[in-house]
Image (cartoon, rainbow, N blue to C red):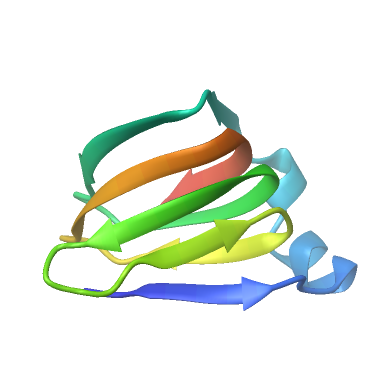
Amino acid sequence: MEIKIESSPDKSRLKSLNVFDWPIWTKEISEFPWGYDTQETCYFLEGEVIVTPENQSPVKLNKNDLVIFTSGMKCTWKILKDGKKHYKFC
């Protein structure tokens, strides 16, 4: 299980994925466990988050990060600054 991060992808990349047509998720500063039954791709519009997968090192995610969370991953989300992201499950 892993987290793939593409920092500040160019606009053509985001358009090719139709990122701006995906739903938006928002969350205030908090900490909670999470698990992925299916792969999620998301693009952070705002916020600062630390995601710690089970038995792995923490990963910091920020505004303008395009991120893929693999199916089957279990982790803890720690939202340091209110988050807002486009997301798609596939």
